[in-house]
Length: 246
Image 1 (spheres, rainbow, N blue to C red):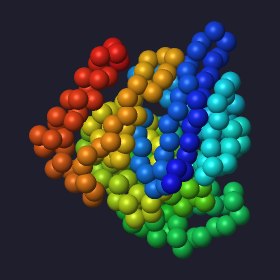
Image 2 (cartoon, rainbow, N blue to C red):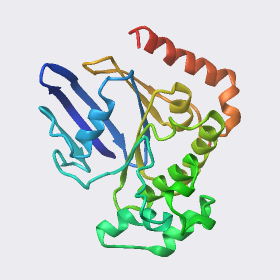
Image 3 (cartoon, helix red, strand yellow):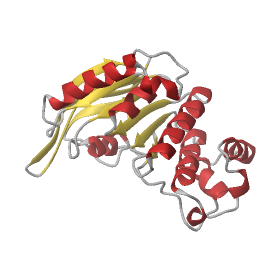
C-alpha cells in the first residue's frame, strides 16, 4: 500500500526552476533514499512534503489524502539535531508527543535507554556528542504520532566510524518500530546499506532520473559493505550519477 505519493510536483522561485514534475512514492513501512547533487532541490521537496512550501504544481498525498500546504502530517529530522537547548534530553524526546497531547514517558525512557542514553535523560543538548544528539532527535521522530519520517542527511556531520554506528543503530530502531522513511543523502554507500529503494534526481531543475530496488536482504550487517555484490551495485549507481555530471 502506498503511504506517501508525490504527484507531478514542480516548483520555481522567481526565475529559478527547482523541481520539474517530480513523481515518486513510499509504501507502508518502506525505507526510500533520495540521491542527488547539491542544489538539486531535495530540501525544497522536503519542505513541500512537510507543508512549509506550497508547490506551484502537483500534489502530495498521505494515505490517499492531500496534505499539500498542511503542516504537522509528517515527522522531520534535519541535518542538525535541532534539539531545544533549554530542554533536557527526555523533554526533547517527548516534544512531538507533547504537541499532539499524548505523552508516553515510559516509552520515551525505554527508547532512550535502548539508544544508550539512559544516563543522559536529565542532561542538556550541549552536554552530548553529535552522534548522541542525533539519536535523541531520531527517537523523538520515532515516538511522535506521525507515521512518515523525513530524514535530511542526519549523519552528514559525523565522522566515518560514528556514521557507520549510527546507520546500524537507525536500522535496528527502524526494523523494530517500522515507519515509512524518506531519507536524503549524498552518500551512495549509505543509501544502499539503509534502503529498500533508491531514487536518483537529476541536476536542477530536478526530475526523477532513475530508480533502483536494493537487492540485499534484511537484516543487514556491516560486513555487507565489503562484498563484491555491494561494490558492484555501488559502482552501477555511481556511473549513472556520473553520466549526468553530478
